[in-house]
Image 1 (tube, one colour):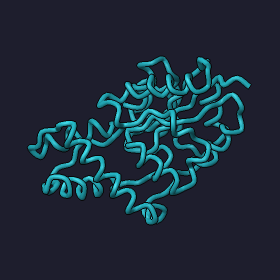
Image 2 (cartoon, helix red, strand yellow):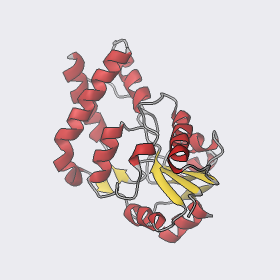
Image 3 (spheres, rainbow, N blue to C red):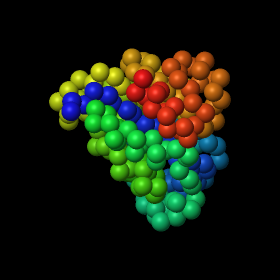
Amino acid sequence: MTKTRLVLWDIDHTLVDFTGLGSAWYATALAATTGTELVTYPDFGGRTERAISTDLLTAHGLEPTEELIQALWLALIAESERSVAQLPASARALPGAAEALTDFAGHDGVVQSLVTGNLPEISRHKLVAFGLHEHLDLEIGGYGTLSAHRPDLVPHAVARAAAKHGTEFDAVVVIGDTPNDVEAALDHGAVAVAVATGHYTAEELQAAGAHTVLPDLADTDAVRAAVLG
């Protein structure tokens, strides 16, 4: 069957909850890379790793050169790799995440991938910890290495998916938990499905312009209706 719908998932607070882990990794990575103690945290919500890293370095009086950003990312990946075995115990998959991914995998016309602020390697670690990677094509996603501007990730993922499958998708759906996820979808004419499982209320996500706001992913029928229309 021709692939007609591309579903692009966010990770943090949409599929999994790793609250506090990113801050801890950044503290260790910053010290390892620059010898600087982390004393202030940037805004993480719905932002890309490139934006977060740039703000973090600037806030600590460091020039965010590409060389330093890349070194910081290598240290973050190393922290993630060291933590792989402990990830299932230090975090959780959100209710309904596995069921929703499995449900869409049963639709021949659907392709599932990511639009996430995470680094590709860390994305894989977070998903594999809970077996959530199996129905996602991680090769065609939009990741936080690409741009400091979250909406830039969507067309990148769409173009890679279209090239791989040799088709233009009839619909693109972006699922996330922040106004930035909603903006990224709307900027490119995609359907914005928001879940109030992060730090933003359903009212805030609705005000951001989401086409559908769900309390969580626990109701697979509701998720299916929002995504497949």
